[in-house]
Length: 117
Length: 115
Image (cartoon, rainbow over all chains, first blue to last red; front, side, top):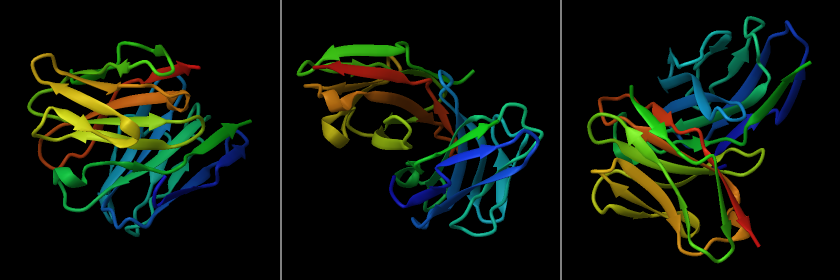
């Protein structure tokens, strides 16, 4: 899992509550990503950020929000607007010069399993 | 539409036998290709990637993959499977265009190596 940490490992929340998942990296990477993983659906991109103070929506951004105030941190908030938030959430980073192929490998954190009761 | 296909949901192989996990892609240009492995309740681990050059790429844990441009394939292989190779394997493609670092992911193939 390299230099990417996610916390907590397991998270339980009641319906209607917002929750924030933490992702920190010490790899000096510019780009960070949030994915959602559901059984049989592979990885789906929620949000990504290619540089500090900038981020873009991925394929399933509705009901989620992010911030990128520091290079090493990319927290994800799952809001009450997300209709089915129970899933395994994965954070990744890739780094260095934008567009350089040698830096394109994404490295993943250990994941957070969110269960909404 | 640009896509990555892993045509087998599950692959079963006996320990010691060679294994192949298939991946084909449909993207424009010359893509970068990746393989990752995921053990239960863990994040993905990078195995190998193809950027350019030799079509046979060697990676971690004895895995290798062969890039075939004419067949638009990037199959993952290992000469002798271990029980510990049992996991979920993902193929991914990055478009070689501009600064967009998004990956297109396959749905994954579950590999079971039987003792």
